Length: 337
Length: 106
Image 1 (cartoon, rainbow over the protein chains, first blue to last red):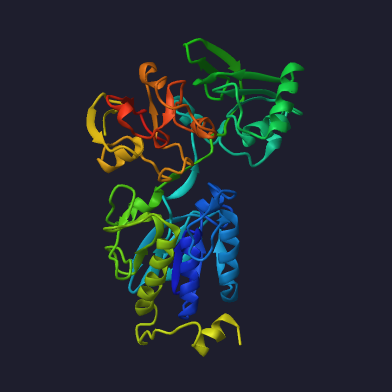
Image 2 (cartoon, rainbow over the protein chains, first blue to last red):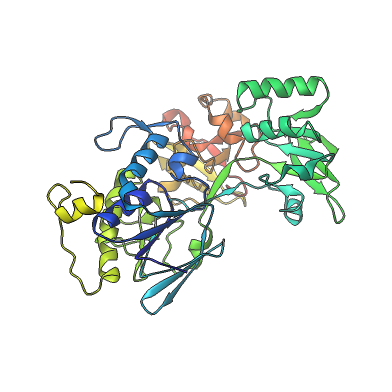
């Protein structure tokens, strides 16, 4: 069990800057994110795309923004809990008990939800029949590639993950690659390689096909694919892999008893607290009249939410506003002279 | 201004007037029409504003720009009539456009 002042859910730019603001006012926090890296949408959706509307930064990429924010919170030495997802929130006296999928437990008077549009999950096959094999022979990520040795593997998708795995697994498995169109969005070297492997009949390539059904009694045996004009084919498959990128799902946040408006959490604009005391929401996930889904709005929201956390974390102290340029206390916290 | 018909997967129709310069996605979101999620807010990075456009209109729309098909690869049940509604800009020429929503966006 970890005791802290604030648990931040989401390590995107908004969560990171809120952590900075907490550090400035002398509060501690722990940061949890479902992704395996820090940066949220900036890293997952557009690491290389330039952003032009961060105040005082004419142009930067999602990755640069993330790195700068990390640099800015370095003095505070926060713990990140990546690859983990907050599953459960429960109130106990003055604390929120926060439990994660990996079995971690935090006790904190404050939780700041900076969860973007929810957590990133793999997109799954639309076919109902794929569900009963989900996690056993229908997979959306690969943890241990040795399970595919000498097996038939049907890979769906046209991006780098699909191409890279098709190339890699073709060394030891019978690979079929199925994609909905002729063009691939993966790297051109990989596309070239796949075409070669297909000509040499090492990889069975099916373009302009999509999944129709997965078939198997007990264990998976075949996958049926269809073209747009309705023609279908059966492919032998011990495993079916789908690589369709990630989608954001609100997930467990919906179960925490918070007021919801579609996929967002209504907050007050004084301190960005939700309908639950000590639970704040900032960034894309919060809503209020006039809300702009901009990173800069998230920064503002995080600064105010941090002050909102103060009264629950230090109930016997009075929060005093100070400037970073003038306050020696803040300079100490930042480790500057 | 264009009158646009959004047809949910269950057949329910919504007809709204959408201002020029907005996207077909924004027309749906601003009018609370269900079936278009638009998680990323129109930056062509999520494929949750996927719609189907029948041939008569599909061929009249400005062609897909780079990247749209890549995103559509990740959409729910895309086909050759698929478009991302955040990439269709509304103008007078689109008056009478119908778009069909997929069963779901994820």
